[in-house]
Image (tube, rainbow, N blue to C red):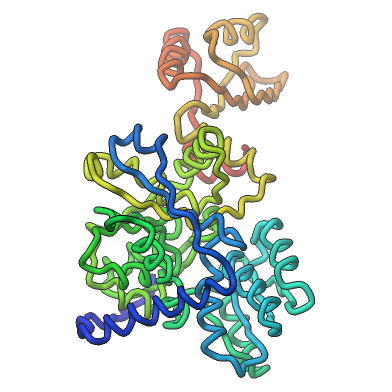
Length: 424
């Protein structure tokens, strides 16, 4: 991780806070010429599970299926004379900028990581039409960001940060304006996903002191969590790009300044595999399509069950740009998180009937999803890679108990990140 960077923690004056709220309301009002408010929907399914009054702020139902066009719109409307806008984005900010470029007739140049899902690249092209061009550069967002800023400096365009920009933060705060207008009274708790911090800081700044915030990040990109520990933004050593909409290696300096009155007690980090269980649950039970970052706030309810019981809660579903080609991976991760699927390497005795004995240990709800057997005639044992799915985690206890009792040698590689990712 990088060195200490101290953020400004001096509280803003009441006058400055009032000015921000007014600006956010003005931004929200101006947006109505472009798109309607996103729905705020009470969710009976989640409310019953958590014994709370759960509402979803459906940013996945915006024209670009994420909240990102809010910040892009607000920044662009404040610079009407600019003709060239440049951004770096893992997908959603790119789509927001592209949409606004075509709507306002402005030229846009968009830099995206090479790892961006194809669905987001295609949609960006559709939203921008002839007004935008796309460059795929960098495996990680921060590499893409550096390339975009260098290009922008050389070409003289206006760089539009996805989160570290006051106009963008102000635009994202329009979400809070809508929530305030859509509810009879504000919720007790609001659950916000965090990537670079633009949206969470804008919403928190507008609602500060009136609701309790819960800020949620993926474990593989917990840059705000690290900043709270460090006392300021710093670079993560490594970023897991699975939750691409929130896979940021360094929280924005401006967003952190607005969030720095909060602390680790307001922060949650969620395992990437577990997020997949929520993606599938919302798809299968509610017919709601969420991308990994969009499912963060809903998944966080599992960790704050006791806190939210009997209270009103708003979860912000930040995006629905899900590439269905990723569905097999999401299912795989979800099964592993729920302990319904495991991978093993066995040493199989090379004797007649050994495989039959092994298969006899499987229960009626166990299913072999992968089987590779490498037999070497000069050895007494062969190596077997096997993947097993079951309907209950307890079934593995019975299965492994029989293996132990019969002297089978095996290694569980399910949670071995390096080996599992190489083999599976």
